[in-house]
Each structure stands twice: as C-alpha cells, then as structure tokens.
Amino acid sequence: MMIVMNIESIREKGNAMTAIPSVLITGASTGIGASYAERFARRGHDLVLVARDTARMEALAARLRQENGVAIDIVQADLTQPAELATVETRLRDDARIGILVNNAGTAIGGSFIEQSTDDVARLVALNTTALLRLASAIAPRLAAAGEGAIVNIGSVVGLAPEFGMTVYGATKAFVLFLSQGLSLELAPKGVYVQAVLPATTRTEIWGHVGADVNTLSNVMEVGDLVDAALVGFDRRELVTIPPLPDAGQWDALQAARQAMLPNYGNQHPAERYRTVA
Image 1 (cartoon, rainbow, N blue to C red):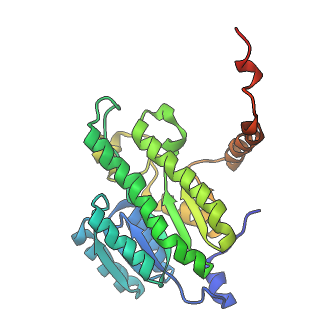
Image 2 (tube, rainbow, N blue to C red):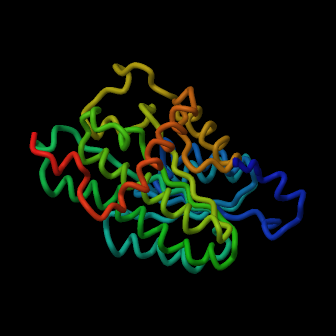
Image 3 (tube, rainbow, N blue to C red):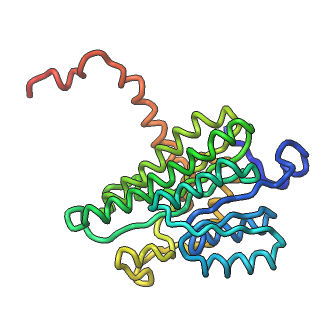
C-alpha cells in the first residue's frame, strides 16, 4: 500500500512534525545535491550543506537564503577522509533539528576493472558506500527514537545492470539499493522513511570523472527533472524511485519474482538439478 504524504499535509495536521525539519545534503555544491537544496529550501526547510567546494556552497547558500528566507549551514568535508566524515557524523547524531538526510555524495571512475588502480577503486568505495553507510548509521538511531524522519539514498540504475559495464561503480550502487531496502524494513515500523533513488544518465559533473562528455550522450535527464521526480516519489513515500522508468509494473514484477524465490532458499539439501549428473 502506498502512503501519500507531503510537508503541507504535515503542517496542517499539527503533529510531531509541525516544526519543519532541517535537511542535511551531501555532495551539495553542484548537480543533484544542489538541486535538492533548492527544492527543500523552497519547501521552507533549513539546510546543512556538505561538500568539498566551499565557494560553490557559499554561493548557493547566499542565493537560497535570499530567495527563501531559510537558515543554511555549510560544512566543508571530504567524506573519504575519516576525520572529516566523523565531523558530519557528529552533526547528524547531535543536531536534533536535522530530520532528513540526503545521502547524495558519490563519484565514478573511468576504465574497466583491470585498468582501474586499486587506490582509485578504494576511494570510490569509500565515498559511495562507506561514507553513505556511516552517515545513515549516525542519524538512524536518533530518528528511530523520535519516531519520525527520512533518509534518502541516491543510488543508480547501474546497480541493477552489470551489463552497463561499470563494474565497481555499479556494485557500490547495488549496495546502496540493498542497504536502503533493508533499512526500510527495519526503520519503517519505527516511523522512519527510507527512500532509494535510482537515476539513469543525468546531466552532472560525474561524467567528467570518467572522461566522458555528457553532451555527446543520448537520453540525458536534466538534474532538475530528476530531483523533481524523486521528490514526487518522496512525497508518495515510495521505497524505490526510478525516475526514468515508464512502467512501475516492471519494478513490481522484478520484486515479485525475487520474493517468490525466498521460500526456496531454506532447503536443507541441494536442489535436484545439482544432484543429477548431466
């Protein structure tokens, strides 16, 4: 059953969410993170912006303060650095005003697996999985205790498609999806909403990280369109939002097929097909 809820209805009901929660957004200096900042500022949320590029965040914050009258804090942090990541974790644990985390920071690297250096792959995994996990872990207990709040994890359709040839990047995004689904099962009964957003090709700077010119790609979604669609899913309380997917029934069918296999995982003996000599 899909529950539709938006901030306006929350305000009107005057429940525990009457005070509009602050939103902490990682990777907030540009692209998807900056667009999330714009959209949540328009909704009246105060913001905590986290990224490496202070100048860009300051410019964005100045504009959004002027346009929307919201309070915005800036935290300069490289989330692959343990000490800087710990600073953001502490903020999430201790600042009770923060009720929504948008785990957006991420990167990609070019080349095939055997061409990528181990150090580059390790940095990719640190940002795309470890940082995301630690930030979710920092805020989740507090949200669960409060009985409200949301965690939005930005994944990718690549996490569903090894055929796309981005092996390590796709593996990190598969982790994001699985983590989000598992957290939803654990946290939804405690009042905490967890959403996984799976973009496809989107006009962001990540393409420069893999040595590609986004202007040469086809079917590129604009960042604003992606975030607007993701927020429709957020307001509907979708567990998984795939903005480019036209037929939601395809996702439902995939989930149904996966769940249909679950009873068979508990068999004591190997399946007959593995006990028969070909």
